[in-house]
Length: 258
Ligand code: CAA
Image 1 (tube, rainbow, N blue to C red):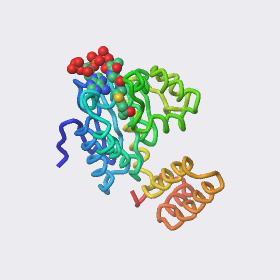
Image 2 (cartoon, rainbow, N blue to C red):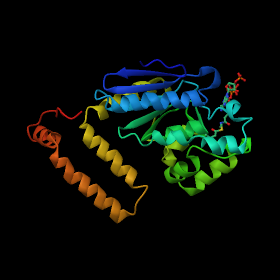
Image 3 (cartoon, helix red, strand yellow):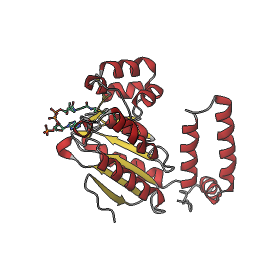
Image 4 (cartoon, protein in one colour):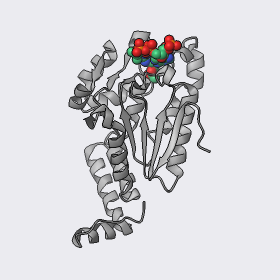
């Protein structure tokens, strides 16, 4: 039931791992890959044994963008009529935490897919960019919005207007990625990080995600109130009793709601 053609979806412990797998096209994002990523992610979202989702690519490319060959001959009405890329709105709406583990090229839709995840772990080989302008188009899977929120106006504007690539060190300085690790350790690090998250109270982790995401949408006073109410609600969880008891008893916490 987890057989796909353009991705590999695997359960590893409590982590759902999605590996983009169109090596000949540097994992270019076509409609099939879009549907398969969204189907696999949705399956992990509804699987009670999964607590965190990792999306990764190959050593050479996380994804080199939307599939140019698939789009090349389409008209405005084809794109507008199909609301091309709108399906991707499902990914950031997942409530379980998601991590992008990026090595090599993350360009155009690849960079945008990585930014849809809750955070990006980068290999030292990672290269990010929004080169759409070089194709006579512009970002369409969130680049102009998420990149601007993540790294600020100056760098986002320069990246989208010139199409230049950013290496991993610059991406870390700019706040695009949470950490940079040696390429050989990327997947292991991402899986360990994901297992750590998946060992926490799942409702607490989901609330963290909801609260941090809220920061993009509302003003500070509203965001702080939203956070405080969610914080109060964690006291309805057994996991709050377990987590605090474990601390006081100097033992590791074992959360039930995972
Ligand atoms: N779409 C379709 N095919 C792609 C692709 C893409 N985005 N990126 C790479 N490929 C294909 C190439 O056409 C090539 O296929 P063939 O062997 O059949 O010619 C194969 O993958 C290998 O690519 P290269 O030979 O180009 O590999 P390279 O190492 O010389 O260069 C690269 C790597 C710099 C990433 C280069 O492939 C490249 O510039 N790719 C396009 C990047 C890009 O413009 N992305 C934006 C796409 S538009 C978009 O994403 C819109 C949006 O906002 C969602």
